[in-house]
Image (cartoon, rainbow, N blue to C red; front, top):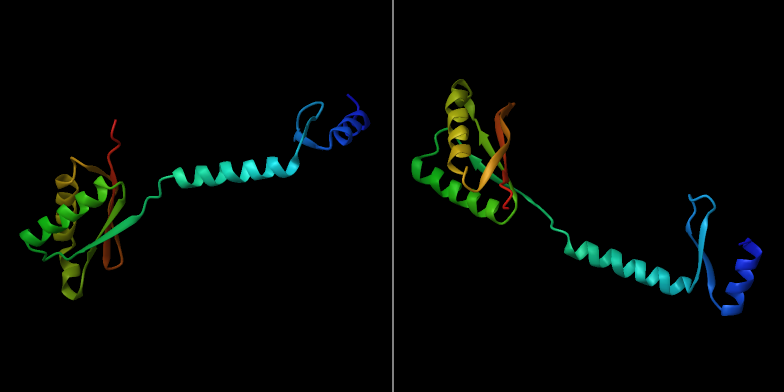
Length: 143
């Protein structure tokens, strides 16, 4: 119908003429209470926001000389984080002459990835960046 006719009907009903689909040919309009419409849209947006899952990146720090028991404690913590749905970033820090033994750090990080294979997987393998080697783990998708 014509725009003037739609406006007249909306005024008679005491409501607003709201353009719902401006891209359609011809554009689609509805006669409704615009304030109520905006309120319901805001409520839907808030509801969708509260239902979304926020993932955090948890960080664990290791050294090439980290002993067996300490490594197992870090692995246990990583499993807790992964089972909670968070990502884990494992940083291997090298100091001084430890830079000559980068292979020890890489081996330790690879072992870390194998140990957590039941609850997570390696998203990004160990990458050396300056004096820091980083491994990123993500939780496995539970079906």
